[in-house]
Image (tube, rainbow, N blue to C red; front, side, top):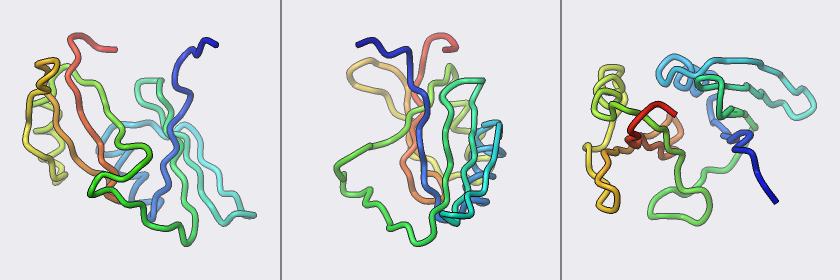
Length: 132
């Protein structure tokens, strides 16, 4: 078996429009397509970041809250790669996004920090030496 990459990451939002604005206007994703699925009373938006790693953003009426702290089983967080982690943190904070302190990964020596989307989903920015 050989995978060629990650096809998409699915995120269910409590407020679709709010989360869409966050991922597009704050994080810089591009809305490539958007569908209303009447049979499920659900929106689905296809979001791209630099033409890669598509996030499918969904709304589902009555979706239950997901436990995120203390650590819960399942997907822990979504991490974004950045060359200038401190600069990304400053940009997010300038847009009123609350960010944890900048820290260094003790295993790699690389910079990183966490922040959250409008539903509290943990997101991370992790340093890379060159653009992916």
